[in-house]
Length: 327
Image 1 (cartoon, rainbow, N blue to C red):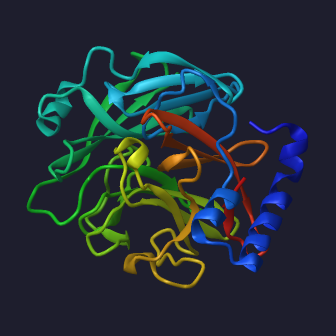
Image 2 (tube, one colour; image 1 turned 90 degrees about the vertical axis):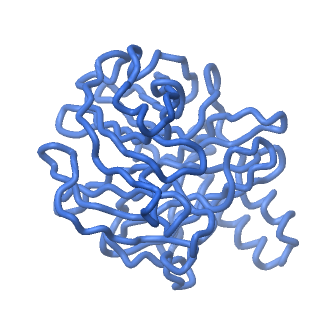
């Protein structure tokens, strides 16, 4: 990650670079190379896909990502990461109805609330919306300590949305919500019971979409008076040919409507790009955001030139209009 001095000046430098790019009207490809920072320095076990990270009460970091039985990594400093087993070392047989028997579980979302870790995660097969989101909890987050809390929501092939890529957001009033979705009719939201972490009520909110186009991986965070919805546009999982990019919109209400910087509704394909492929960084996306002592932190995966999936970490700042940018 950047040194303290770079952290101090990074936001101002990034803002200056962006303004110079706009003034110079550089070609889009050249502008992207200059406008977007490379990932911060990370070392060790950094092969990840669909990462989600939380800071523990002791000040260390716990990262969970897509993999057989859900893979765990830990870090003491947000730089050096090491493998730390899996969430379900004995397997998760309750998910195989949706995975076709595979142990590969997708897109976990980890958070720490009320003395427990909450982990929402997906079970599906590629290209199918016969999918489900489950919840597990743990008091330590360590491999083998997670308790299955059951099914949260499922979709069938007759549905026009897809129950994968979950993200928990607790609003300013303490209400719990789960956003999720991939392709089909876009990103959805349901309310949760804070006592159980499972669904409460039958209302299904639509909060983003591209008329069936490539949108997924919602992640909502509250900053100031706004809720910011981050999503990934375009295509993942194609190695160095991936076209994933990180988009954002915001709303004063957790259930929307979310709009981008130009006022376009995210339900109508809107989204302001804040990170895209540049140089040897291909298809950055499936982002998660958490707040640390130095800044809001963006965690994502990207692909190297050789097609390997890698951990990306950058910091987030906000411009004078309250819009986030990456540095």
